[in-house]
Length: 280
Image (cartoon, rainbow, N blue to C red; front, side, top):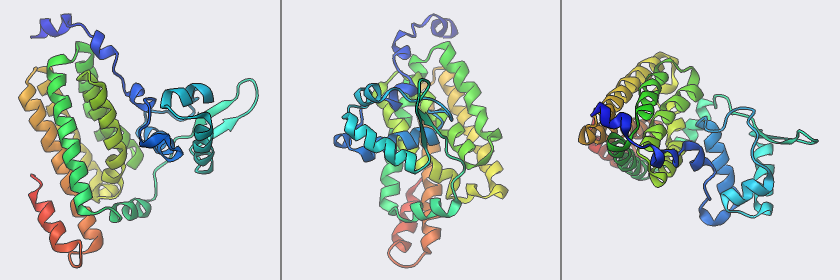
């Protein structure tokens, strides 16, 4: 098996990258809001680094499939939020300003605004995407992919702060999709991680320093198990472990949302039942 992996062509995998997902055409009709969301989530996940220069307006607009007018509107909104800095002159351009740790209250407010069914549906979609990506990675990953996954699996345990843990955790899952050599799955993984990862590490119990280390150590252990299954080309096990990992995270999000609302009122009993259906 190892020899097969060493000799495996990585040409297909080389066409897939997390960066490619960042600059893939946006859907949602090419609206400025979709561009803002894409850039914001990519910076939050660490796919766009602090201080990184974005492509020129014409090039970026073409990559994202939007008009230059729409792009300029999006960049103006990003500048207002402090996520992009535009410099003039010969060495000018638009540069990313990576966000720091967001206030926990703002993340909890965002989580509180989501219904239990929305969280469950997003978790179901992420479990399907992550599971399929892990299965494909077990049969398609190159030796370089495997080494990278084994390294990335450990990073969440030593990452600092909500933003650091969010980036380390999500990057592992995105790289699993990259190793699976599927552009569509990689784009979906990036989008779903952007939607859920920051809430997972900032709005649940993991947002408290007292519990963050335990949650991060558990995530690293699960990442290692997924990476090892991929390295051994155990496709079924890799998929099962990835799905279980996502389901546990979904359970945490739903429990946190129920706690924010209390267990009475519209979110109470329904939320409790939904959370109970998520496997531990």
